[in-house]
Structure formats: structure tokens, C-alpha cells
Picture 1 (cartoon, rainbow, N blue to C red):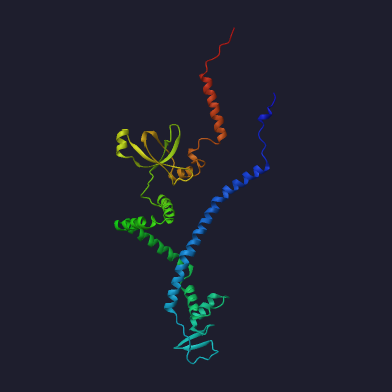
Picture 2: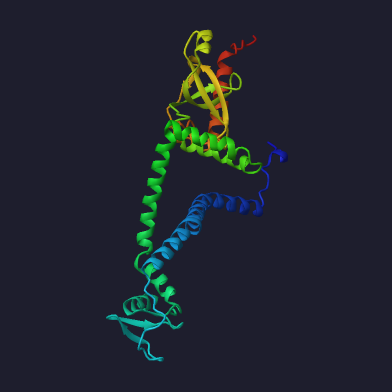
Length: 318
């Protein structure tokens, strides 16, 4: 039996194998790396634009309120570095100002090998930083303040007056600026979809024949449909959000008869994973075949068996 040379499997080059291996490695390494990069970027943004300005403002205010800097100490020798004034021992800085010895020694001990500040205010600035504004104190305090601010903002905006004022601010300012309104509108749509639990509440996951018969799409039931649609349909109708892959933040809102939908035994997280991955990530209990090739072979054999059963038996001559 001759073997058709045209049916030989195509030759796979070494570069193709290398490229596939690199892409697989990138697909494995990209999610954790991107997650780390995003968290680093968030931390750096909070550090540079929130924490650092708050610390600088607090350090300046505390230093000016508690500083005890003397330009001259009566009776002190010109070359002296220590002097007593009003029962307090003072130390001279490089600029010639005098600060209390306890403050000076505390800053010197915490700076270690770093040079001492030249001015008296600089000594107090470092004193406040090491005494009151250490990160182990400021970060938990900042988190508590942010949580309280978000809580009171949420309570205020949930009320009638707060909601009216905020809507007026958005319509009167944010939606009128030429460039900012486009960015603000896009960001607001994403944050409302992800964070606003009151606007969209998914109750369950269903499959519906959309956009045509025989083509099934995943959807999230958001509510019961409108009364007029129910009356015309003559049966319960569901309002379904059909998201788009791989960005489920957008999609289509449809109304379908409840009898024409299929309730799926999957969670919302599993449905989102299925949509974002374009159907690649299938829940374990919903997998129907071990591999695509095995499934195709099994379907082909089943079709052949069905065709054999339908064909009439052949009659032999003679």
C-alpha cells in the first residue's frame, strides 16, 4: 500500500518550537509579574502623592510648634559647643544656633553616620521624623484615616443632599471640561461596574440562544423583565446582561423568556473566568472531554454508527 507523500505531517522547525515554549513561559510568568508591578505602582503612587505630602506637612507643623531654638546663649564662650540656659543644657549647631541637648543627642543617635542638620529647625525636623512620624505609626494611622474618610463620604453621598450635590458637581464641572470629561466618564463606568453593588446585581448565570438560534451565549440575570414584555410573552421573562470577551465590563442587555434559558451550575467567578479567557478556562465540573482531538474522534465515530444504523441492509445476489 503506497503512502501518499502529501499526507505527511508538516515539518516543525526548531524556531517554531522555541517560540511556542517562550510564549508558554510568558503566559505563565506574566500574570504574577503584572500583579506585582501593579501593586508596586499603587504603593509608589500612594507614597509619592499621599503619604509623603502628608508627612511633610505634619512634620513642618509639629516642628514649628515645639521647636526651642536660641540664636545666642548669654555668657557662652564663642568656641563653646555646650552651654546652660534656664536650667537646660543646649548644643550648638553648625549654623551657630542652639538647641536643647536632649533633642540634639536624640537626632545624632538616630542619624548614625549621616551628617547632622546645620540649622536648629533642621534638627527639630529630623527629631519629629524619628520621634513621631515613623512608618510603623504613620501607615496604620493613614489607613484608618482613609477608611474613615471613605466611610463618611459614602454615608454622605448615600443621602439625598449629598447625592444631589455630587450629581450637580459632575454635571456642572466634570462633564463640561473638554478632555477631562472623556477620561472621567470612562473611569467612572469601570469603577461603577466593579464597585457599585447597587446598580447591577447578578443573581445567577444562564445560557441563552443569542444572537440567533443554535448559538449559545453566557449571560448574567440582573432582574425580572418589564411588565409590558411579560404580558406580551405570556410567561416569565428575564433581563440578561450578555458580556463581551475578553472585557466583561461591556456587553448587551437582552430580555429572554425564562423557558428559553438554561440555568448553569457555575459560580459568578467561574463565569467571569470563562468570559475573560474567551472560553479557555472551563470549570472542572463542566468539562465534557479530555482533549479536543479525542472529542472530535468520538463524535466522528458516533456519527458513523448512527449512519450505519439508518442504512438498510444489503441483499446478496444469487
